[in-house]
Length: 279
Figure (cartoon, rainbow, N blue to C red):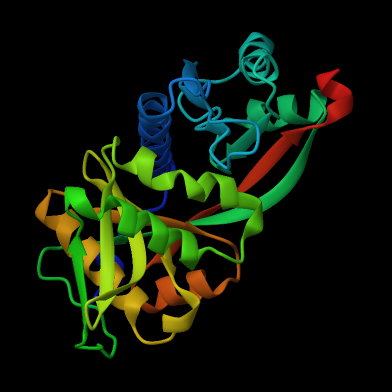
């Protein structure tokens, strides 16, 4: 059972670790995209500690992470980041932690950015003997996929997110990219049939849980709990002491995470440069 002393304090130091973990994970994805689809135009750059990723105009990864978290930003830094996206035909989006340097928010306002959406960053300590306090479906088995299971994993992930049509193109190519990345993909099976997929990305001692989904016909049978527990244990065996995930505020994913020991570290705001200011 976790208690308050087990959790590192959610201060700037922790926020920097969490933001850098997600930034590195997305950088790895973009680098894998380049290998899988050389003509895609995917690219990333770093400006004053901020990672800017371009994965295509409609990709959820086309944005920045860590804005103002590692160095205070000035107008020329924003100029460089905005030009990076605009020259590639993408929108300009920043995922901003509330612990960022105060000057960041002033510049966002001055330059015509508008808040677009919010997300909660959650974390919890982990260990190799971790067991979630949840009823288990003993018929569900979870494993890290083999090289010959990439297509099965990708199809399962695609079916799990089928209702989110806005990211359909992104998900359709996911298997080709993941196969060339450092992500660790996991598959959950019920009676030897794939029903859920998820992934894990590691940076230093922090594990990022990403992309978990269950196919509609197999939901509410315990796949997500099994997938979460196995990924957490695997991350701990690889040297991680903290796990993190990102959810929509007030969502079922947040509720499920909190039931399993995750706490909200902070709530981020996603900012978009308006079309008028881009011109």
